[in-house]
View 1 (cartoon, helix red, strand yellow):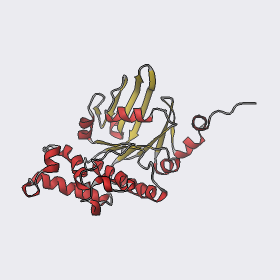
View 2 (tube, rainbow, N blue to C red):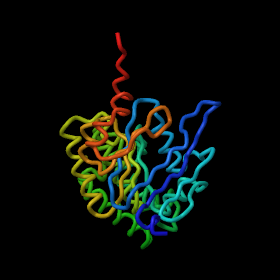
View 3 (cartoon, one colour):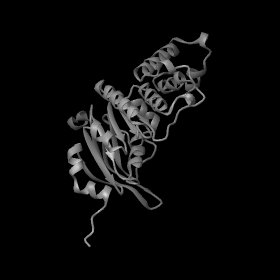
View 4 (cartoon, rainbow, N blue to C red):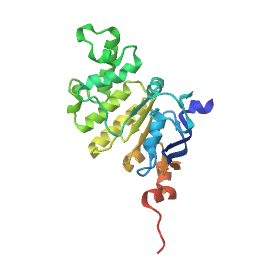
Length: 261
């Protein structure tokens, strides 16, 4: 019980195969409450498969996922969202023809008794009290992420970096205890990356735990309290950024083993 109080997410011996290919093999992970936990590894290491298992997009062949004290191993993604787990994706998934505000309101609907379509497309002058509260929450999320002035724009018309922020705003609308972020600064320039670092730091300081995958090593090393390293479906190292940098297993995974000539 004490362990579950200290750790918001515990993955135990997760294994996943696809047509005989072992994508993940008995990987365990403990994410401390209030931490920023990074996951790195070369392409094909199993990072996205791990995220899919944690988020409920996939079920493991074996092992289990404990989230906030619940055995969530067979819970669907929406059930995990109800418990307080939110996720963003490597490839942006927004509703392009909807407004920025409507996109965030869709995220908020999981905390309401109203359906998504009802919340989003109700005629304005017939808004219920609940819908007004949903809109109020969505506007607060947009202010927090710096998108308030874009609220009426079509989401597809936002610049790439702002679309990334919109995904974060929509995730925050679910009131997450834990955010799973899949390459949150992919494709961003240095200034945009610095902006996301500032935003994620603020989110974390307000009490939200963050787990993220990222290929930009400077970014993940600078923001993470603890880093887990995957390679060929196995966890090969875990530690602080300095410990990971010095790990022979990590150096070999990224650079290859030197051969004697």
